[in-house]
Amino acid sequence: MSRLFETDKSGNTEQNHPYGPVFINGIRFTNSSAKFWYGLLEEVIKDFAGCNEIELSSSSSDELTHEFLFPETALEKDLRKLLHADIESEIKKTMAELEIMGPPPPVHIRLLSGEMEIISRDLPLDIIDSEIFSYMAVWLLKWADIPEIQWNNKHIEGSFCMKNWKHTLVYCMSFIMEKQHLSEGLFLRSICIKHSAKSHSCTTNTAAP
Image (cartoon, rainbow, N blue to C red; front, side):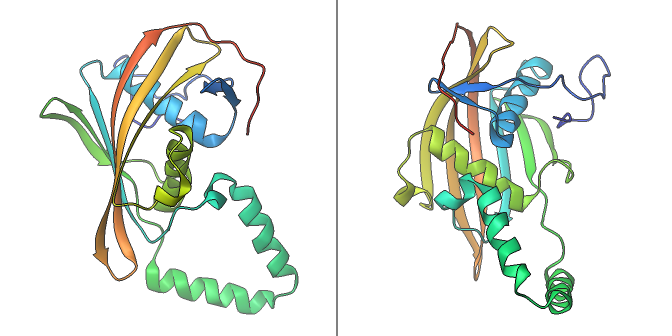
């Protein structure tokens, strides 16, 4: 995964080394969400030692559901619809929507050390935007064993730990996810994360997406 921040303290702007499987709750994950959250924690812990809190936020109209766990399923449904649709009409409809609504807004991140702000910026759109953010956010709720009926509550708290097989450290996070009304059908979704790293060994034969 590409770096979320422009440089590390050594001035390196290259991509992080590819991650292997990420283990969460004893289950092996290889999906983009696991790599994103693991990569975020690793980059922050490595390059911003004083950071003890991460805040991410973006506007959205999405209601989180189980379908967000498997975006490929939604893509297959859309493709099946297109097989029986007027392609030219669908393109015009999509272009009109883009013209009215514009591209998806960015995801804003803040790194904090106590009350001091270390970084405040938008994350690169080629890595994540508001639409992708919904797909990433839903996995936090899944890993924290929060019932789906609560996924769209205004205030949600959860925690879990994650480990990459190439590393001896386990990254743990506790998070607060909040949903604030902005306007009709639009709200601000924010995630506040407190994190830590500890040494631990992890082995498992269980696999997941």
